[in-house]
Length: 167
Image (cartoon, rainbow, N blue to C red):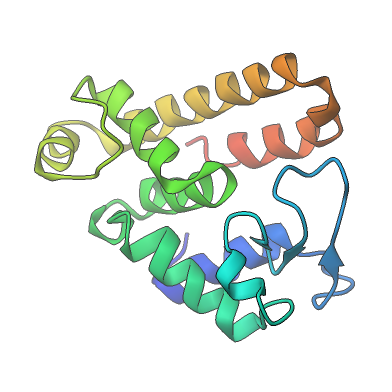
């Protein structure tokens, strides 16, 4: 279980980067995000790629700002749920992660982790919400692969990553 933001970012990078070559740039033509370095995709983060691939330090800063602080995931008190939301946001975009959480909580689905969503979350058992979020991720992955079979090559990895969060 991660203890702080640095631990969460360490875990994200460990999932995103080939451990045998941490400086490797991934450039799979079937990857919708385009080139990636440290898990930071060129498509989602073109500003970091304008002068070449981002460094590890730049990537860590981007994770903290765009995938933790900006969406408000640092406000989630349960560390397991917080970590899963961050990981989900890295894979699918923070707004999608928040929308799936809002669907589960049955609050307005606007992609903003605001007072209504946080208030509804406080009334629930975080373990239950965490596991329901795993289910939402798995269903979303199924829809992605069904709609675009070229993404099948990542199915096992995506599913393993999603179910890793089950409690």
